[in-house]
Image (cartoon, rainbow, N blue to C red; front, side):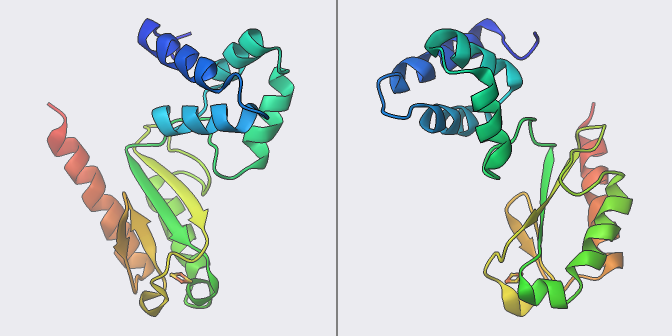
Length: 164
Ligand code: FES
């Protein structure tokens, strides 16, 4: 299991120990794992189950029920497409399709090259700029399909410039 390096194991076990005595420990443990690693690997669930006796299936249900948890690491670029009312009316669906086409991945997934994760989010609070996309926490507004294609192209270019 590549995910569970010795360092990761130590960190996971520390989190389990820290929350073991908390009433209803599952969610605090999972939140701490998500905060530390950016995702909750299936192996983490097995580790919690073995240490606490909480069934791994219960933990899996929690992780898949709450949108705050993800089971895979994010891609290098985290793209969030706002689907709040203003953005929806301004063409969020069209923007999502353009992003899916440009990155080669579906909304809710990470591209095979692990460059991009696309997610649908609720209002990000910049409605006057609709339609809005946040890329690595930076908000881009009043976008067209051509803009998002150019944005993805630019991100790819930055990535290849950084690769030795
Ligand atoms: S609806 Fe998209 S920023 Fe508010």
